[in-house]
Amino acid sequence: QVQLVESGGGLVQAGGSLRLSCAASGRTLSSYVMGWFRQAPGKERAIVARVIWSGGDTYYADSVKGRFTISRDNAKNTIYLQMNSLKPEDTAVYLCAARSVGMGWNYWGQGTQVTVSS
Image 1 (cartoon, one colour):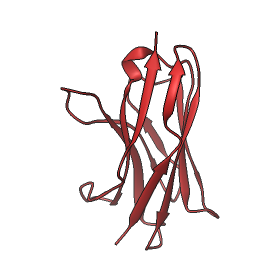
Image 2 (image 1 turned 90 degrees about the vertical axis):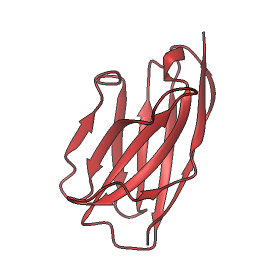
Image 3 (image 1 turned 135 degrees about the horizontal axis):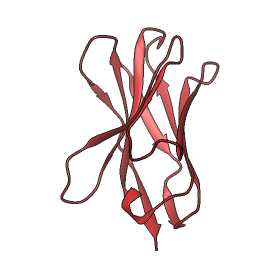
């Protein structure tokens, strides 16, 4: 089992920045992929970014490339999502997720609200 706890959401004006954190516990994450998803009202959940814990390979959705950065801190078992140049359309609940390599996303955090005002 992997437990995930997000923090760092809030209200920010367009153009501002936020950093989300996701603290993981329960298992060694060296064989896991960690990701950030978001879900806006009336929309499907969509992946924002992901990182392979060992190796650090990253992926970003086109809508956030150049603005968001996913990173990990091995010592703290924590991943981060640095969000810059935020836009109102980034408003959503952001969820941290984990999966074993080659498997589906089967561990989820509770989510943290990000609201970007225009």
